[in-house]
Length: 133
View (cartoon, one colour):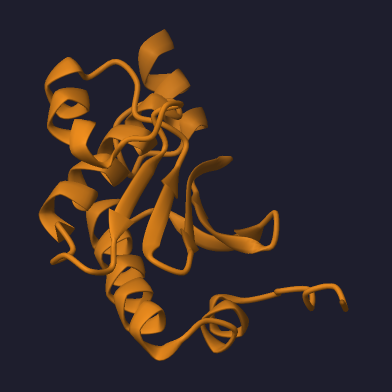
């Protein structure tokens, strides 16, 4: 078995997954970029991710679901809403056999960006500068 090729861009990643997953991921990537406009799409650990100053969210395609990592922390209402999608560690699995809850995923992106160091879409340095002022 040969190792997976090194992924260097979102396009490389999308080329490696089946069309149904690629369509869902393309829409997901655009949604995350709108939800956290100052985020930068990157490849980290050979999968798509979004960062402000550091990676705050990973997205990966699997045979039957789209996974989002890391778990949401600090927002009890959002965590309760995500319960049907969370695994034992809190990472999220959105089944491809069901309609993708894009509005909920946008909330996840904002929450993960915020927990990464401040207001969604504001890099951590800027958030720290505001906190000191």
